[in-house]
Image 1: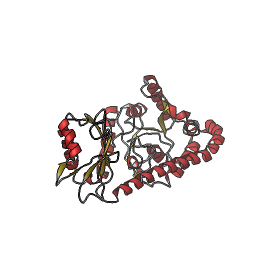
Image 2 (image 1 turned 30 degrees about the vertical axis):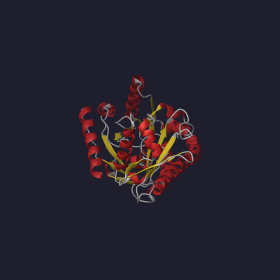
Image 3 (image 1 turned 90 degrees about the horizontal axis):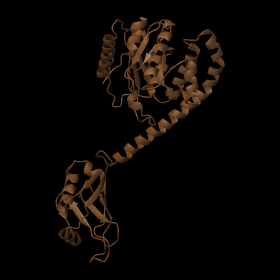
Image 4 (image 1 turned 90 degrees about the vertical axis):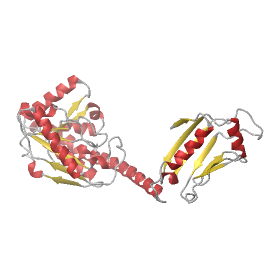
Length: 366
């Protein structure tokens, strides 16, 4: 953050406010003050005053609560601040104060390094490094698994197109193996309500909340050959994109009205040929973990085709790999709750019922 201090008293006020802002945070923070020239030329002290001052307070010095302002060059003056003594300036600083030559611009950088325990910084750092390492390992595993399985998919694809053009169960079998191989080393999945799943031969519209990049991996482990919508650029990724094309997934250009209409038409054709479709009605990943508003497209498809809607609630994927932090894999577990099918002739009502069902489950599971 950048602070503009109009006069020297503002500088003292800032130090006092920084010290008192938290009973714990001040003991484990370092604030760097990057100051401009105290004066443009050498003064009576025989040197130019420091351009950089550092306010340091560590755990080891927390018992006496000193906040030291250190000059970068040897022989320069120092001032000390503590809650008992207040701001005590040395002769040099007092003279500068009288001459009103404190810097006009001060840039402060505050870093909260711990949570109040001596080893908190190390523990937090270890957790972050561990999550990043797990994230790197996750992508290594998923790429290796994809490379090993893509050959089987390529060999099977001509036969799939001949005998199972719409459902493509063989390709989904390989996709299920890929998803299980990828996530098994990192987290476990608990399923609830499997009895609510319709028969594999009965088409349906599946809808789910969308918390994380891991949602697709998680739902593929169900072993159901439902088609889901994915942004067009993903299909151009080597190996992964090829596999998605062979699975018959539906491409979509976001914010493209024509692409959206083509997507809905594809869903109608697939359902009419006995294939289920999966939607994330929020339309995008939840940035804050809260359930967003549902779009009616999925429910309009269900009404037009006369198939049931199967709501599903994903719990925990957003904590393991938060949206916007796809390079991190935290420790945790995932739960998938499959709710009872809902049917109706009004897309608006279906949308509201499905969202309330998922929302209630998220609140109940905490």
